[in-house]
Image 1 (tube, chains in turn red, yellow):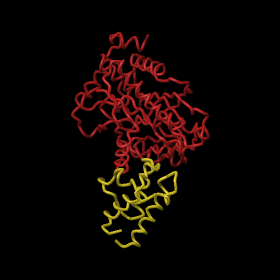
Image 2: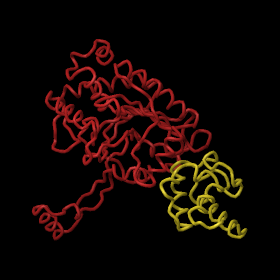
Image 3: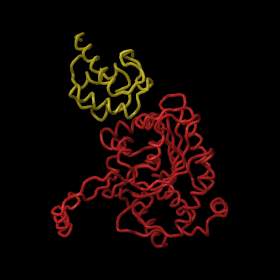
Image 4: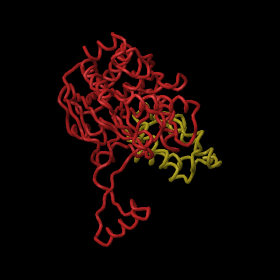
Length: 319
Length: 89
């Protein structure tokens, strides 16, 4: 989410978390029930129509409940422009989670080398060069370049829905490498940006609670990379600009972030040269639902067959 | 505490801040105890400041110093660098 970039405690495939058995058991249940289809890669799944029916209902409910003011509704591809990605500063925070798209632009001779390496199990990706796109780092990122210049009075609001990528293969089915974020974004003056985050957090808590999930709002704990990350993480905790809503899915000790509410201040306004109506550098805020994570939390809490879910939850989703 | 070194260090710190802190105010106008974050330095800008200070003073901040308080004012930065270089500046 923009960084629901929200990821409490990364679970690497190498180290066995105490919750490993619970993750594996839940994943096996989801695959056994035909909700998810494995692909041979941790964190990458196909989804059944039953699973998607929950996702669709959730998306509708989020729009109805969260989007309280007229917003421009947009959907972007799961890839985004590299120059936009560069401006988001994502590389500084999460270089190990990003995905860059590369392709082949060589000669016939180099093509032969590519085939030869691929056939022999060699390092064929070394023959590739970067394309002008990267995998989408957060659903709201492609929105900011649309705002370059001076915003109208009252700023702009966007509702964006799309796939994001995080390179973090995990046996925890809730931690997918490719997943959907449904975001409600505000770009405009500082005061309204802060309000957008605060009111979004409140409405999100209420909505997820009514869906029967035990939720709690906590300061975000993003897995920033390396030494720079140590400092960014400390600052994130101090500033409490980004909050996450967490719920127990496979573990009560390590609940999962399913939504985030993030006030970016001028983090995007400055690089994308966005000014609010008064001429100051624009601030932005986003409220982001990890729709796949919410779906899995519901399946975990209410059972693998949505037709048997509590009537209050079913009415909310499908009335 | 040699006065000349002190002044030189401050000048260098303020140069780094003016290039990397992205403050909406003149760095020269700030008191040495003025809170840089209050003055508008963002979290990401403070990381750039940290990297530039490491290069300018040829030091490496240890993990324990990678927190907001280390970089919150010109004075705090000077103390941190003094600690790392073990020279009274």
